[in-house]
Picture 1 (cartoon, rainbow, N blue to C red):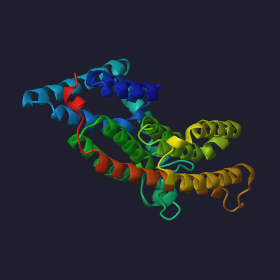
Picture 2 (picture 1 turned 90 degrees about the vertical axis):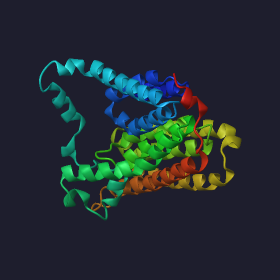
Picture 3 (picture 1 turned 90 degrees about the horizontal axis):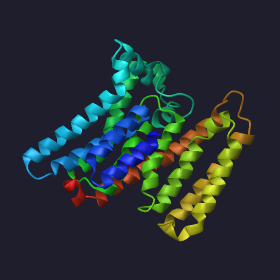
Picture 4 (picture 1 turned 180 degrees about the vertical axis):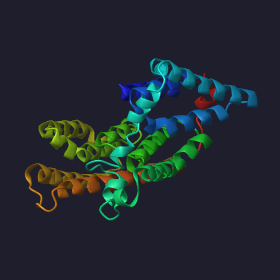
Length: 314
């Protein structure tokens, strides 16, 4: 539901309906707090659009109306929890599970993969680690946020969503394997902009969740869905460009198949029971880091002109 509400919010913003888009995004955020992954992208795009309005009064009015829309929507959603003293804090406490640590199981992000070399959980208390991960996440999001404030554009906004959600996945506190679905939304919306990268990202994202899918008994569904997806994508290989990426994609797919077979049918050493999970997480992490660098480079080299529609938002 939250991804659908977010997609609706994106559609509204593309049509210049910033208040409707803000309303839908706040609903998405309150339905699933992981939608916070997109918050900085929405903030920077809307702020950039407001600052491009003619005249100081129109700029100020737009910012105030956007803020009012957000506050009133939050108030509407949280009203049932505000009637009883302390109830809202109990809800917030469940949304921010600091006791669980910076990560659980084997997720394909920086903290989990680098934990092999740097024992983050032993070096820092959970509260300190939460602050460190927050700073790292904000720093990773900053280039895309600054870009959209300066040059807001529709396609730039989607890339900003992808970069910010990937930054949250790679560096934020207490990331779940399924959180990779959030970057998958803007990546899918960019399929016409770069079909090869959209297909590639979807495959790696699905592969990164394999340890979780094995635990949940979904191996057959995993394999079947990947086969169907690859068959559909292969119907229009002419759209999978640039052509030079087909070779690394095929190589990555081959390694992914091998690691999948190893995870499903192999037996790890008794002294290293999670060795195969680490291989999968590290392999997927390298890809996600590469995508993050690529889309940041793409944003700053290709989108330095603001859309005219941004200045005409209703």
